[in-house]
Length: 317
Image (cartoon, rainbow, N blue to C red; front, top):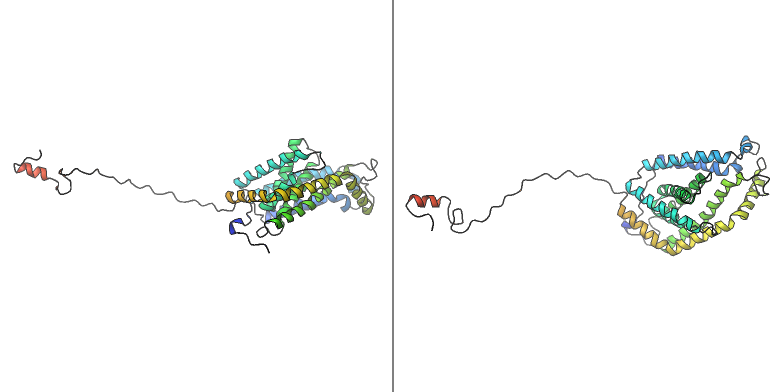
């Protein structure tokens, strides 16, 4: 049985999802599902299949707008200056990690950082972080194209899912790392699969026996899609999943502690209080002590020198 962590180690969310943010996420999620899965959702006899080469472009343009709306809505819900600063640091780190394994059997170390960041900082922050990191890495590597909005949405889902995992306040140690490693393994394959859906309709039906064929029954296209995944991306997805598991188990504890320490020090949820200014007080004047025997000194009443002169007694030596 896992011991309950101390109060200062409770989950701190950089962004709390309100009703508007949740509704915006649900909207972009629904459009994203349609954008990725329309080859299987549209009726084979519908006019959508007649524009199979145009549909990905239309969904890409729509997703750009929707992701912007979601980011703006979440920002309005409480993405403060400290959260923006942490978002920038993590997005820059993820964007710098992605090219390290580019072109090498899917070894992309940024995925493990996205899993851990989503776990600590929550689903709202995770979605914005995943989308922004993918956008920044595309600018860094020159990977800008019609696939970029799909990558941003898929990575946003990937990081958001890590923030929705159970036990953010109770599960710690080896159990938490195993949970995150299992999630990273499954989500790495899921990311590759949905990205295959984004690119698969671009293939001409005459170029390959595994290409999408508009108007064909859904079952036949599904078989072609599975064959397409095995032939083109299975090895890449496996490399990404294995590396995510290895890095999560090896470095997860250290990175999780660092992220939680940073969120505690940032105090995202601390209320801002304005105190009234302190009233100005007049300084207290301190008089220097009078030497003994002088007028005003202890035992010598004031005016003694004047009285002594009036009586004919010298007032001093």
